[in-house]
Length: 164
Image (cartoon, rainbow, N blue to C red):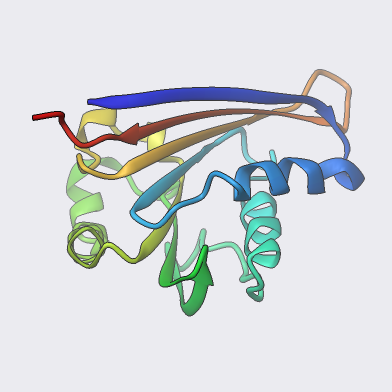
């Protein structure tokens, strides 16, 4: 059983992004995957870096060329967790995804339960491949035509324990 929540922020300028970040951070949990979607240059990595700063971490460069960055040893709502950030833009197909090590990391994080995972460009793959039993947050970033502002649409699906 799962619960679903969604919200959006429209026409947000760079100097207004902190209100988006604060709202998203209140909904971040361990055992969560955050999927980020948007055109190239939409601000996916920028948003992740703002979120990391809000959590007291030093932002990293875009993992586009490394595919994966990891940050360890910080606290999210009183829990020490690991943050993994993947950028799947250059990954072509499920076979290549297999070679990235993502499944080992997801399995390890699912067992330990102390993790937060950001994945850019996850929509290049069928949604059914992502593990069950984890809370999922989808963030879609769009930019209105001829406008430097951004729209942030957020959807959260939390796995709830079944009632006996």
